[in-house]
Length: 352
Image 1 (cartoon, rainbow, N blue to C red):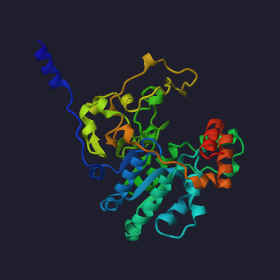
Image 2: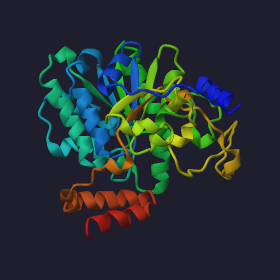
Image 3: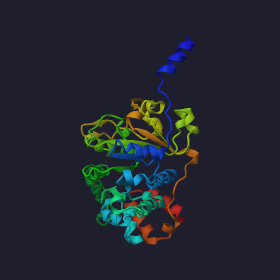
């Protein structure tokens, strides 16, 4: 009887996921998809950043990809970025407005890896003819901080410029409508097919997240990649710990694809019921009502960067701590947003 049960399990269980060379795997996805969406993993992760650089620096990349849509730049400065990546002279104090003046009041995009990404695209473009150069599309809505003086001002601007609607519309207009191909680099929560916050319940695809909005258009074909910046995949498939780093794996029909998507983002972030008027934030759902969702129904592939013990994070440069104008700007915006804890953390980090 035991032998029969073991045989049944062997037949019924999905096969293990297999790793492939990640740059080649992603570039091959552009053969069948106009958009490849690459989740960033933990914002500031240096291993993820190093992989992104290796991807755009591959000689095949500009032959297959026209645009890169990024979360870490304000669309208010698109003309500045266009000039910069094509090789024009742009003063540093002008360029840094791209990442310092986004909708986010925190230091999240001030980490040096994001500026380095823009400079890497510029360097790649320097060796290309103008018609083959990579364009960087800034996906963060064009907030005007000069018009933000109170928390209500901030709330009104953020409500008017939904952070998922704007890059979706941008991608349709600048990529899909022009028959181009784009790599989209965004936080993983934006690239979900089912929103974990509303308990993986079905929702109007035009109402919420970036990838949902993109795939609501029949003409848009998206290949989505979850980036593991330390999730213990060996708990889901033991041999993952022996994979080369980085590795890419297609999850459909595999052991990793059959796993609950929640296992890829462990934690106790609250979930809420979704109603006709949207999520009911007044009462979190109890844990026993949380739904499960197969990972293969959430993402197409997983980028494995290694175990959490190998992950390192970029940090705010000490030069910014010594820049009084920068510090005053950040503290003012954090104050408006009511983020007192982040103010304390920034000052402590900067020794103030």
